[in-house]
Length: 361
Image 1 (cartoon, one colour):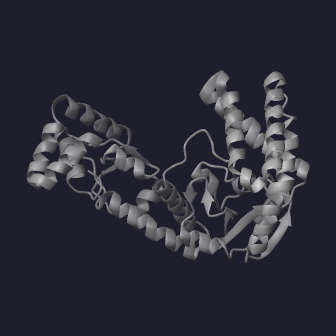
Image 2 (image 1 turned 90 degrees about the horizontal axis):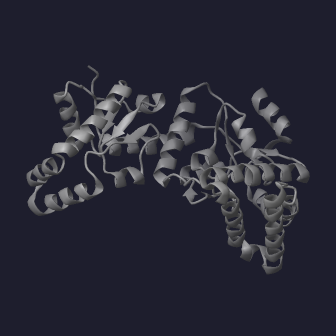
Image 3 (image 1 turned 90 degrees about the vertical axis):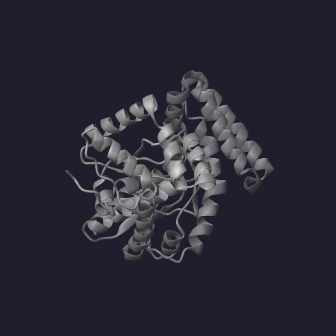
């Protein structure tokens, strides 16, 4: 028999599988990468129990909970918990505070001959641990930012390094105005939890700098934690430099070819149209900063490029509008932002040179 635990560090370092007893809405607001939602009560059931608790007290609420989760409903949920325990004998269960919900499920499983441990303190204690450890990890880390103009392939550099955190990967977004992927971004809490765990794991390994992509305050709709932003603002950096032609190649690969495949995988034959509409909508979000004339020019070039691609499969038509946006919009913005940076430039060169420099140290 394994024991209940409050060793949160080991839970997150090992990626221990956990089943979350909280209601689906609670899980959607924030959970952990290795957690699976297997709630004791549905959102509606939890709301009824909460109302009962306020009006009639704890025991009446407990009695109502047992009535709501009984019979065939109880058996279905119990079967799902047993199956999780069978598939993950090294796992744990938890609720919000490690209280009634997790203890109830633990006892029901025990009655079925399945001893399965719970996380003491539950979600609330684990979340507090990750918030505190994020601050500790940032304080202890030596960050080096991977900077460079749009299209230089900074993410490719990050993904080629062992001691790195892929912020855009965790955020499921490519960082630019066009960076939204077809799949939704995680919740802010999920993003912060994943980030804290990633940094915690790096802290337990050999010492050395941690590489991060140079990001603004937001990655899509997700905010970088203030403690991390403050440290990044003064961190040293390496700058990736590629020719305009090479940068256009990267943008085509990421935003036209790869993104197009994702839309086709989700929408089939309608994927091309969905992709084109998405890119035009993204362009519309920077219309004011582009100015009316430049916006109209880029919008027309983009529409022509997608039409050509639809007819012939040729993505070459995209080169014109991408090169225009890079030179007229993104490059001046990057140069201004770089001037505001306080961090020292440690090295600059193309992707392969930066990777060689970063791995040599």
